[in-house]
Image (cartoon, rainbow, N blue to C red; front, side, top):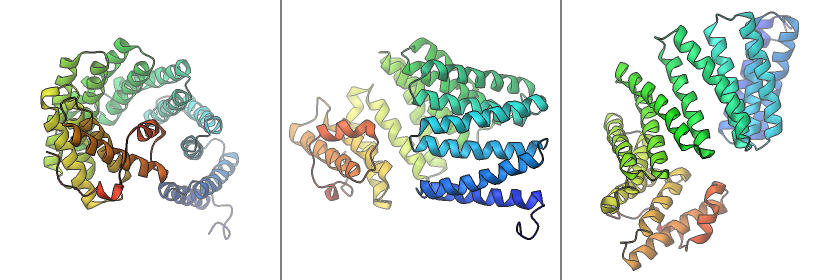
Length: 362
């Protein structure tokens, strides 16, 4: 169609969108090189359309989306410098669009997200101060949008995410009190959203994340009782979500993660909590033995269970060998995050085939 009618911008825009969707598909399939080619083809068309009609806001927004897609891909590939260039170009367009239409909430939202992308990149590169500046810029816009349209749940959710990002950054930087304030601000928003729309599982899961963030922070600060209260609320919420959607493997994994967390601050009940987590992970792997995330999570809980001071020595050895076997197998297949490589090396191991279909460790 574009070859037949090359002057029609709408057809070229459709073609650009087709390349983008193909890029999304290839990236989801793990074919990053092919995804990049599709994204670049879409970007070339988007740039040509903007040059042809420079005052067309929708075309400029399309171009910023293409730039961010390539930025996301390059960041995932570890090419931080190239990702930054794409993100900065996208940010420049987002700023221009907001200057042109300052009352357009969705364009301001795009600008906030551009700041957050750059903040995420700078944080990943270890540039905490620069990341904080980008996050603060995004937070300021998110606050403004909520004040402008207080009834929009999506904008309130964005604001809670901005607080969460800043909390994560401050925790990494060792500023526990500042992290707590940001996390508590995000938690308050998420509680209000759940009260407003109690049937929305996505909002409840956001609340579950906030509870765990605060629990993890309090545990790191040595406040075990406060951590335990957050974790208990998280367990209750995760159970409710699983009861509502019993077929959701992701929600079941969340519940197992809650059991693992609360075990860290409840030593007298840790055996029971961890055994419940193991049961969930084994059941998940019985349904899908290829799920590498669940294999990793099972190994981590087995490690936690095996290292309990009260664990019987022979049983502890069995648990740690099983955990080591799983992690070493994942690493050999390139499916283990670098954060866990050292643990994989430290643990003993046994053949992984014996580790994914066993019965409960209750």
